[in-house]
Image (tube, one colour):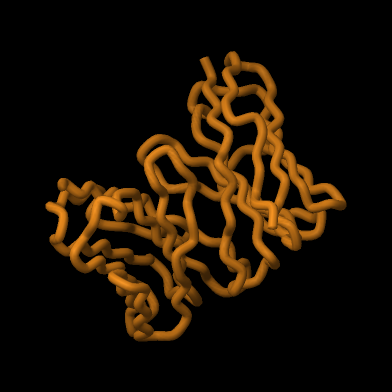
Length: 111
Length: 114
């Protein structure tokens, strides 16, 4: 079945440094979604990418979808303590369109 | 707009018992998905219901079963509980079952099996 891998599992940064998490799928995706889960909270939808090579920005967050639609990345510029949490990518394939989540990358920001 | 609500928030059960978890979907949403999230892991898909019919099922044994009601609320039932069933159970509703309907999660039910 479809597998979605995310790296790194953890990332410690100093406040103000940049952060990137990478997501790779074993199969070609139709869409990819990104979610953020704060400690003790539930996943919250951030964005969805659909087109090959698509790039979307949300303030300091930049999301990319690979040309082959098998990988994606999330980059945060100048991290803040409010960015702390676990970031999940979730891949969707045609047919079922049921998101398959990666293991997530936990971001720890040191003030 | 009322968000996704789940009950109970916490639950402690003994191995072999049965449990029912409940979820009220967000207003206007007709699709409910259930996920299991073990500590330090990503959410694992259990099953999805669309307009009271099962629309997909993940790699979980038959002792995991569910229902969706006419008001689109849902239940997750787990029989013959095992220690490995200890996890956060997340319910998520979406406006539709298609690719353009992101998941809106509830706060989850933390199940501990002893």
